[in-house]
Image (tube, rainbow, N blue to C red):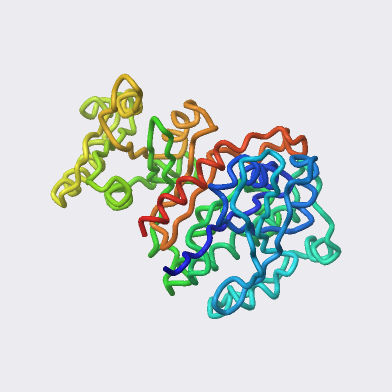
Length: 384
């Protein structure tokens, strides 16, 4: 039987908690992470190891890319339940970024020069300061995302789990993307030879009790409302249906949230439900989707919530803008929430929280959500 490619985990913003929680995943659940490789700068992880692993249980096995995938002399012992057992972490060291791109970037075009303020820092191996927004941190974070994504597109890894990044640091490093989702979309669209607009993607946030998919992502509320369209809503319903049909093994029951109070009250509080949402639902039903709504946004998440007492009326809620969907998910707790990018030609998950600069470097950040993201990535990649 052929061994499947490994799972890739990126370092996140090195000024935040990303590197710490990545290492904690291997310490807390080594069996779950046994076949994972980590992409990041070795110095960043050695610094984080001092905070989360004072007993020096973690060792790094530095790997490299070859034309056919990973090159390594990996010899992992089975994870041991003993507290003192060593955890060997397979690391793709991005301090060798140029040589990595020779293998995972061939044929993908669009070579990129480093921002001037990061060139000297990278060459000198200076580490970013903790808890600070830095161009260097944004560059390091982007490098780990791009290398993992290209490796997944070429079949060298089977899924990508991304630790949190900071959008301002990404911008300072001259990566012109609002966040992970748009950067991943661009890399995948370029690989497929399409414009970004021809590869529609959506954010799905899933928790044990609630699953939400967003029509619009990282844009202002004013722009989210003005850009609302029948096409965009219908596209989101189809993307949600396709993704959940694979994972559930059946057609999902989807609720579409209204935009206005009480879903517009028949036009008394806005006409978006009448002019856009209802027509999108009608087209979706005609295509065989099990969709319902528009449901009043002040009750739809409560109705969809899954608890021990009640199963929930819907498998997912399609929300119309970022905060409409993320507030109820995050209110349920950040420890279990997972972000899944739908519409990509690869599996990508991430924790449902940010860089937590206030906790960075203290060794106190919890890895619960990242562990959930690894678990979901393992499950989804086994379905492809």
